[in-house]
Length: 200
Image (cartoon, rainbow, N blue to C red; front, side, top):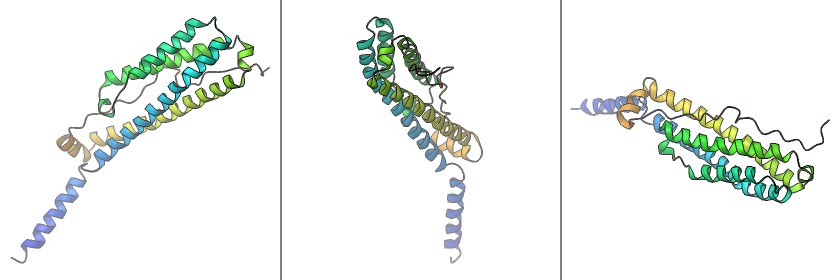
């Protein structure tokens, strides 16, 4: 009788240690980290998207003849803001690819707009235009960093759910599926080059 309590206590401790080693806590922790990093990616894309109407209005005032490019930017922004991927959809490659394609279209249309504006020295000299360009470049840099951090978190999570001993808990307790990393369009990681006419 006196040995039953220590044996039960020992078995409980042993079971707790065994479960802890099977991803009971580490898998959801890693998954929540991925979700937080995804939220950062979305916030940075939203920040860039919020800047676009100001750029369009500024460029419209200085180069009314470039209506097609401005329309492309507005349409790309509209499509990108309508494509949302929740943290629960990060295991669906089609949803993530749709989000990436929409954001890539915004990046491409902004690059074309900035290249076209090079033909308008008066516009380039306006302080509000230069401020907006700095904001876009800053947003692109933040997006690049957020995507990198997200992909690191995804790699850690995917490795955790596929390696022993965490793979046991990931499969049995959570039915964990790999999360899709973000793969931006080729060249999307580069900020648009903007020449303000002060280089030789």
